[in-house]
Image (cartoon, rainbow, N blue to C red):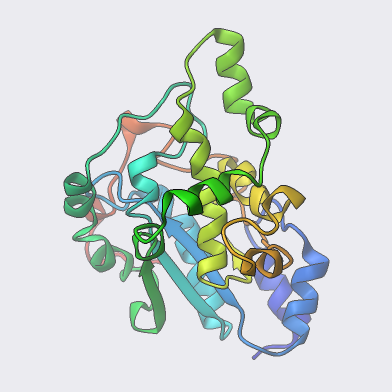
Length: 251
């Protein structure tokens, strides 16, 4: 592996915020490969161009000798991420999610080394949750904390409904990091609330005892400098990765 300072210099490129950089540096100083997680929900048949930004950062971690962990969010897609949303997402069926996810790995393999990537689906653990497991997970955060989320506070001000299932999303995303033993998490600026739920005291001990330890891991969050995720906030102008020229090289 490269020296820690060289790794940090590369990791900082194109990054708005690292939460927290001192923890990241300590992890890098161990000399052990870190587990770097990126989750993607199959809400459409295309991996869109906005996803390529964190995927390229994930590939950079691979090139530095770290372990990439890709989560296909087949269960989080059923809930729907409220990030950046002024209204509830339309619910997808399991059949729709499965159809959407069929081509995802082929598309993603154009950017990251899929052969060296640990690929999993969050339905592998959420599909085994009992109602008691859900109760234990949701008991680790208050409604005041959840409703302080900007998207939700804006909806309250506008008297727009908030569906209860939407509150599960950040807890599920945090638990994904626990289930995959992630050291680092990459994503867009709109994911800050979701990422920080797992780092907060409210997230400690959620789901299983392991979350207490995993919550102590650095959830380093990576954000593109433009402050938005391409293709997600501008859905009518969304560009699917399959629409990009097949011989294009992502560097």
